[in-house]
Image 1 (cartoon, rainbow, N blue to C red):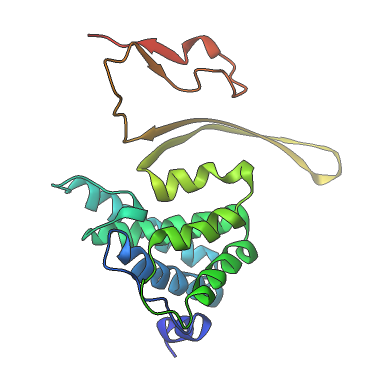
Image 2 (image 1 turned 135 degrees about the vertical axis):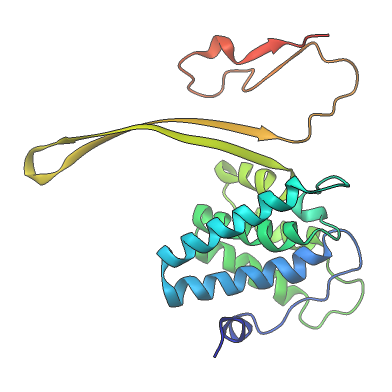
Length: 216
């Protein structure tokens, strides 16, 4: 039995999506995610990590060759690299953040809601309301990052130091750099100042360099 066949047994039906933006997320992204979860269970996380890395590279290649402008996942339209590659990555990442039981409970609630329903058919609003309800407030930023906006990260491990401790333990210190970028910087009127965390809500060691005046 193939992974697709096992996934069909796991989620034996889908809701009919409406013919609107985001329809392929409801059909293709959920199908791809189900297959990835089954593959993860059958072959282990090491294999899944390699596969997700390949998916990430295909997504990045797809967006690099985009000609009409990239859409967020919930509003995807005729962009296979978004509904396949980004869709699987986004759902897998959310599973790690909120837990498999929470995410799968949300997916089942979405599917059960429309089990015998006719038109009007489902949109991503129907799915996302269940995902939002299953996500703790402290993690709702991930919904914006993965589903509602086009957000990219640049993370780097600068150094790792391991120091032996009594009892065979080790103290590990990791120093890293992380940058979060969002491709939606459209504002009404000429901007005067812009930056990251302008209200200093993050525990930032150097808060004075968080924002800058916008050059003409």
